Structure formats: C-alpha cells, structure tokens
Length: 216
Image 1 (spheres, rainbow, N blue to C red):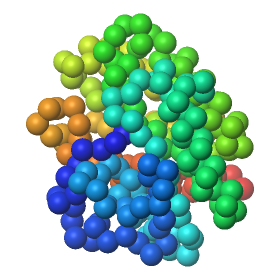
Image 2 (image 1 turned 180 degrees about the horizontal axis):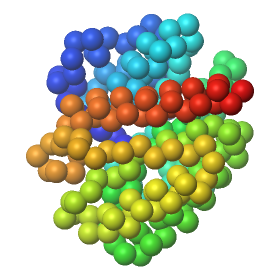
Image 3 (image 1 turned 135 degrees about the vertical axis):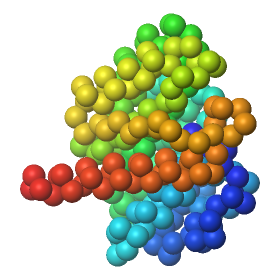
C-alpha cells in the first residue's frame, strides 16, 4: 500500500519521528512522514516505538500502487525489489525480522480469474518470502481488503481467500479493515482511516507477541 493519507492531516504528535525508529522506503533511509502522502506505517511505527521504547525498530516499506498479487510473485520485479530492500538494510546491522505487514488485493478483486487464483498466489508469496528472508516463523499480518465496493466485483472472493490463507498458514493473521474511512474515490483510505489501520496492525502484532510469550 502506497497510502493516500494527506500528511498535513496527521496530528502533530505523529509528524515527529520517534527516536528509536528508522524508516526506509524507495530503497533508502527516509523520514517517516516526509512525503505528501502516508500509509499505515506512521501510526504502526509510533505504536511500536511506544510499546518497545528500549528497542531500535526498523521499518522497511515496499509498495506499488494498484499492483496485483501476480506482480509480487517470486519471479517478478516487485518481489525481487522487496528482497533487495530488506537485505540491504537487515544484514548490515544484525537486525532480526520480527513481522511482515501486507496490505494488497483490491486489484485482484476486479476479475474472476485473479480472485479465484488469489489464495494460491498469496500462499506461494508468503511461503517463498519467509524462506528467502530466513523468517519462517515470523508473523505475517494480512490486511483484509474493502468490502461492498462496486469497483471490485470479486471482493467477497478475495476477502474469503485472505481469510483462508490466514487460517491455513501458521503465524499468519488477518486484520480487519471494515469501517475505515476513505477519501472521495471510496477506494483509498483517508488520513483517519490509515491511522486506524496502522493501529490495528500494531494491536494484532502485540497480541501475537503476548500469545507467544505465554506459550514459552
């Protein structure tokens, strides 16, 4: 998700980058709320910084607006670009991957063929990415796509596929996007919606961590 939230609509406290956060996008280190628009990473980063104040947290954003899941398959350019970005940052300082956050799927809800193959393609993407990043047990957070949008006639099928994958793959969590506010096009989330989405991703990750600690 590129994100279409207007940075000018961010609350003042979210415009200041936490000291223990490093943010990378477009293959280089950057300011967290530096550009004209932002995505769910801003609120997610602030939540992580507050919950884990003694940890150095690195967030790497790799996004392509309007992309289909097929464009993220292992042989494709977006996937290879994602790997390069992560491997450029992580090995250089001994960082450990703690989570993968995924928000994509609307484009695949435009046609029946894409929707019907979504579950298979998403599972392949997750399994291969975990293997390539040596992160087989890392939580994978799937943001479920919008519902009841006429632009995406196959949204029910894609939503069902996302739920199916979250159920079938271990350490894979489904994050609801229901009720999030949007901009005029009724497709992209507005600033308020993206802040809430980032919060939901953070809550999902923290709850996962708590469950793992209880098991240990």
